Image 1 (cartoon, protein in one colour):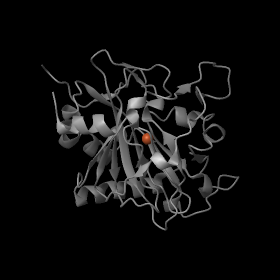
Image 2 (cartoon, helix red, strand yellow):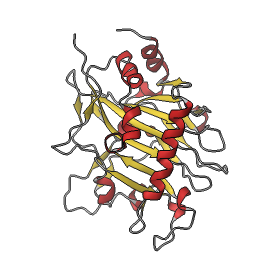
Image 3 (cartoon, rainbow, N blue to C red):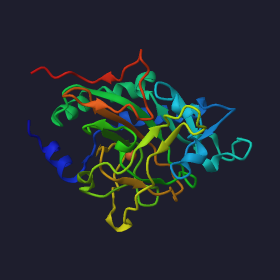
Length: 288
Ligand code: FE2
């Protein structure tokens, strides 16, 4: 089947859908994200950083076991050496993940909405499944950089089928670390993988299989989008976001979808593996 959306993602590697969410939906998701801040742990807080990934959290089973749970990851700048908060608890989290779409009714509702299913249908998915979800805070001052990456580094399938749904819950600007893309870069294959360490004796539980590629800064185009916008992200398109240098947060909700039919195989090496009794939830099954 041909569709305008399919043409667009095949050409650029991303699609911008303005006003995808109603104002009420944005407010409901934003409120749920704020409420999660109040539910974050008060002890044994864990940080998340894509820059200092190996030092900060790779050794932590907290992250590895978060695939089917709601877990809270703090900004590096939000905690002192003893794990005590240095900032307002409402501005301390980097993200919450990775099963909000299963464990939280507000996020489940939008993830499994008819609008989302329609997009997957138009993108020719036959039996799409949601494999993870995250609420991202990008807090003012401490909201860290997300290094240039392809989502297929983390959610690899053979052949590649991952796409991201990314919902802006606040306006995204150059100052607060909007998404930036290299248009067309999804045509260049998968450059790196983030894998579970097969060495069970190793202290490091997850690792990259090769160093970070160097992508020229000039090739990135910033997406300054308004709240309510949905950005569809091809699994192989290179994207990143700069630190939030503004005085306002830049909240977003995001989840990822993979194909589970057409002989598409979810890679065993991926850090995220569904527990045996909890397979990834299916959005729909296309009947021919
Ligand atoms: Fe990403």
